[in-house]
Length: 240
Image 1 (tube, rainbow, N blue to C red):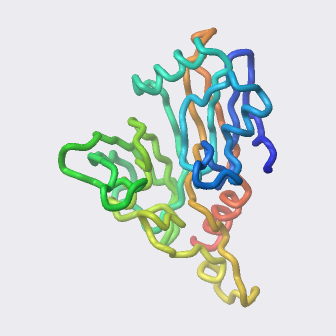
Image 2: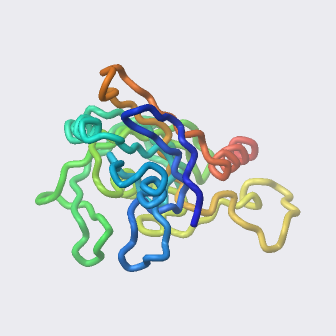
């Protein structure tokens, strides 16, 4: 059983964690042996604690839990009202043509592939993602995304539809690896080279909510994981 992720904020009403990539949010009924964040959090704080929102299991970053029912209602209401400000950092294969803009596509679950979303013209849910290109690195790019709605896989399918799928997104992208040998001229490393980052390059960097008691803005920040930071370091060093 993995350990509880690092706590980035805690008080009497809520607690926020820096979830690592690959840790499932909720238990998998088809795999009882798989650990989940819900189980780890309730093991520490008791059954009365509740998740306020979700991020993809494959992603890393900020996840918030409410310790009380009033806090849960207040925080959940902000997500429903779309007043929460979320910032995601991603590495993409390719990049949108513009340095900044807004992606608007209607999404619905793909009936042919349960759990996967698809873009439709109607009879779906409106989804909006603002993006800004932080840096371009040849075949790759670093982007900041600010979703204005909260749909399943929203950022992933928006960027893929725009021609810039997230690195290591095998659902909406491809298996293009980020290898040091592909960046560094004269690479003389291992023959069995490993990718600089081997998981979905999607990180929930920051979340700003209104605190349920003080009613003041509260910004929660999850530090960039080591693998993500290493990937950006080498992209910046060898892609100039």
